[in-house]
Image (cartoon, rainbow, N blue to C red; front, side, top):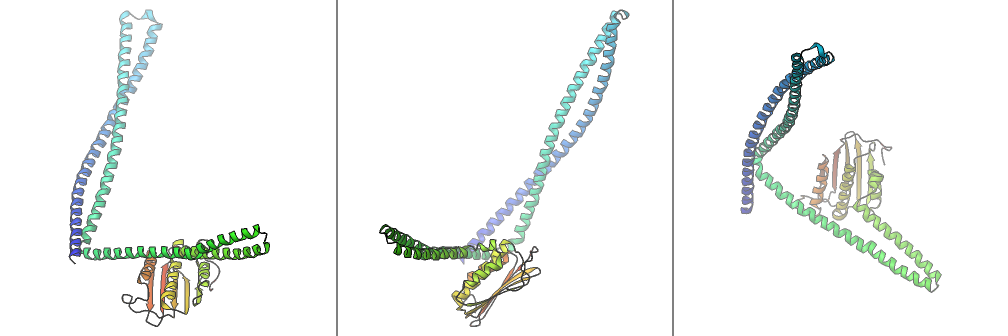
Length: 388
């Protein structure tokens, strides 16, 4: 209990520090937001003033270009009718044209400078705008985080219990995974690995017989070898099917269940499909198959059932799978050791992950019934067949 209280206090302290840091960060981001907003407004005003300056500058350029064109025509006339104009008149025409040309060059240079300045300000305005938008988004996110933390402070104890449960579940999942790996390794070692070793021995024996020209014995051994390879291949396929039934991807849920249930020789199994079969998503088909598989394993390992029924129902908006047996059943899951409690938790989590529900109805010596119901988020593609 002391450790639990200490851990809870540490979590609360971390949350307090986090909230304080978030509040401080929110204030700083608000200052950045305000500063960026002010800078954005300033640059916008500068761009507007600059546009006015450019309009005046462009007007000056147009006026000077028109005036310079007029003075050039006058110079051409002076040059053509040189004798008609006095020296002072010619000098005045040249000086006035030079003056306007110089003013025009200055005005054009001023125009280029204003354009460059406007481009620079517009790039700066774009950067400031992005900064304002990021600051605004961060402020909103920090506000949501603070609201979330403030609203969940009272639920720290419940969260701690959830964390403990998740840790226990995590350890159990790891144990189950390791047990599954051991089981698969044992199946491979006792089955295909031994068969392959026998294949090698028989191949060596056939080779010796052929070398001794005992073809009849070699042919008989080859027949045995062929049968052994077939058995080994069947065992490998069975192990692969248990790991991941590829028929789900190729044929769909119903044919895969038919194949799986036909191989269960330990009980009398009644399999019924009701409603118009629909094409389900891959996740949904895997979930339904694994839940049925887990329920069948529980019936075989723990219930000692002789008769099992499996029902798959396709209805508008949902699909239901049900597995029932006539086994010994169980009472309270917390006190009963006859059924793997974590297996049921795994089935329930699979169902809830897809937005479904899982219910268990069992009484001691009265059998067990497990029912899962999953919603159909998308409309499936109807296939032939109402009852199998």
